[in-house]
Length: 247
Image (cartoon, rainbow, N blue to C red; front, side):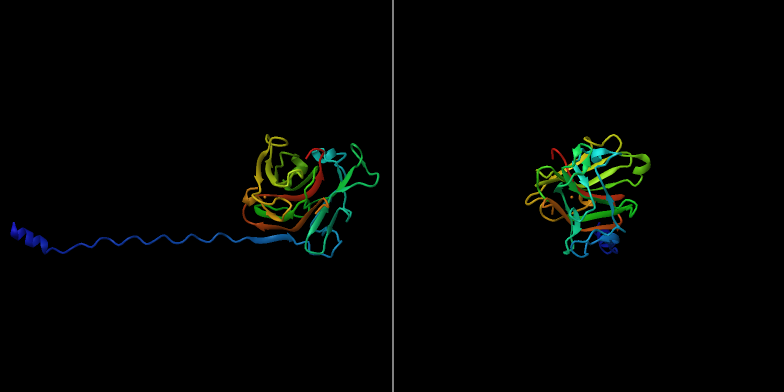
């Protein structure tokens, strides 16, 4: 037994296997590549760049009177409703109408403006964002949204709609975002409502679909609108300030 122990004690020891190498660090996320933008950096009082933006005009008639929302405003391209302020901001201003423009409900009560990138730029598999400050006020209904570019052939809501930002002017402490499509549109979309911990839509915020949606004397001010490649799928971007009878 003593010899057996002595023999065993003299046997060569076996080293444990080395630990496996640590996994390599994850690759950095792909960087955004800006493919379109408007910084609204023209002179004060000038209109938007019409190589980038298209004006929707009128009250929606004869196609969709009230723009599908019973809106009370008449959209114009006049600089009293939409202009650059010379400080890198676009102002969309809703005003009480002082002339005799006819609307679908009678004499138009309000004027405002709406611009889109329809037929100018279509974003696909990208990120859309804008830095926006809104006004508070009963009846104001500003929005920043996207529509499928096939709306002219398949119609709405089959084309799809993504509302990046909507706000009822009677509640400046919250904003909402929504997705519309076949079977979930109009009053029954998928909606997310966000309440601000402090401040609200009357402060500048950056709104983009990728983070969950985010001056009118009554007005809306936009400092920039950019499109970058990578990420969520979107198409036409549009923005406007509308007047509703109940917001």
